[in-house]
Image 1: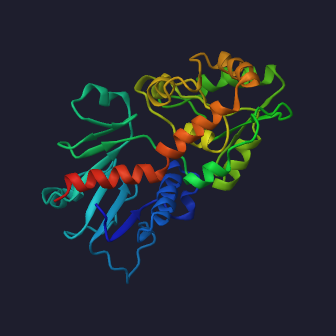
Image 2: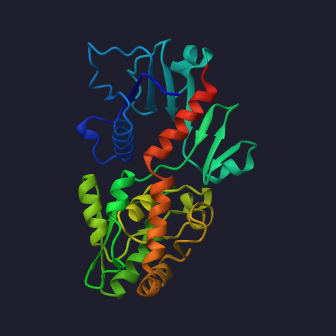
Length: 306
């Protein structure tokens, strides 16, 4: 499917900077432009009066779609949306769903497209993890000429949220943080940084773990952090068995015990050949950018839409 126009709807307003979905939509926008699509980005607070929405493919998310134009001549890719307002469009076979990968997909009779990417053509839903926000040439430019185990760095920069309760990760991050402090490394948390600042902080870090909370561990949710960290030039380090086994096929450093994960990563990275990091970066460059996600999504849309 090659739509005449792509419209991203939601999370564009400046007040949304720092929200995960804002960065996801930002990366989609960047990749669609790179691929040469006619792409626009609007939200409920930024509705143009003179834009021709006809024959567009909309991508939206359920918290920010209250004023999205609903048209019979357009198609819609929905993420966590209430189907009620789209009922008439669903009946015309002009809606499909986009959902994040979890291990639940392994229980269903649906089509595997790639590692952790599945298509349910009958249910009209595609499942995949998010990706790095970099383009392939930017990943290639980030390849270090020597192992980026920075013995002079005194910081591990965690870019993103730390919290508790069901979907939280503080219980898993705390042992890693304590291991850092025991070794004279300061663990810092940052939020709401620009993409450029994110790259800089990750590159400057002593190491960059992808630590998952209890819920993420149990269901196999894959944070985009793993793709970003590797694409920025750091070794993959994770407490997620899904990332370790299903996604990167044991090519990253893994331990469920996050305290021990620090020491495992420190020891391994001291002797790790540079070729291992470059191989991981190539995997992300070739399979886990938003260009890849867009190609899978549009191919899926071409099969489910009339």
